[in-house]
Length: 65
Image (cartoon, rainbow, N blue to C red; front, side, top):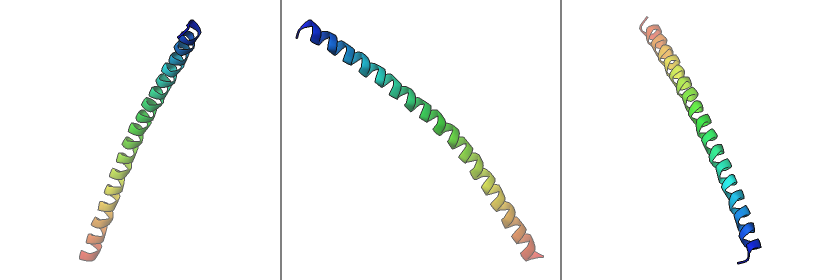
């Protein structure tokens, strides 16, 4: 391997390393967004459960009365 090949390989390795770092950052960003969305969805599900329970209670009161 001559010096030119070594330089070309070093440049390719540097680009690959940069690409890997960029991909790692994108993955991290997506994980953070996923966590935030999970929290939002959990909150929406809880609100839905509360609404369903209220409807059930109202139906039970109506049927009893």
